[in-house]
Length: 167
Image 1 (tube, rainbow, N blue to C red):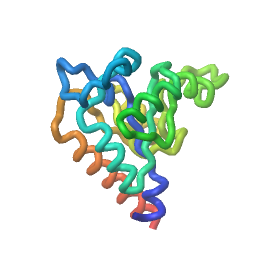
Image 2: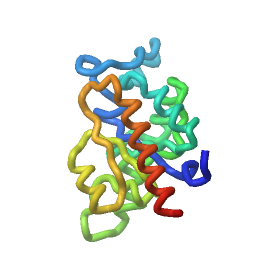
Image 3: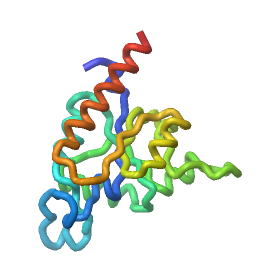
Image 4: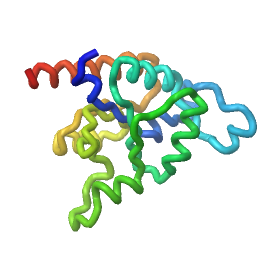
């Protein structure tokens, strides 16, 4: 593990990325009653394993979502699956810290403002913003049994490229 890799951040959107519909995606086991009535979202199969693997590899893992779910809600839900995020940016935080008083309406996500090197999202428009605002993306939407390996590979490519450019 290099010092630079420790500082590299990977973020995930929630809806249609980590939270998926069990009728179209493989999911983690539903939480037990009554927790499943409080936390109704279903996690994409492999989410806890992927996040913990990335962290064990030295990456910081964040949530960057345009939803207004509270940071406390997100932390509690993922803690039940054995996951602890290094940072969370929800719509409230984004509006307060990124959009602020700007007269120009900025994109709903600008991961580079939080030094996030790779953002995983389901929206094509986020990828186009990545080119404009200086962050890399991985587009994920459909069911894909190899999604964890593909994201780790993409993170490793970005990390290697950044290390090479920094000498």
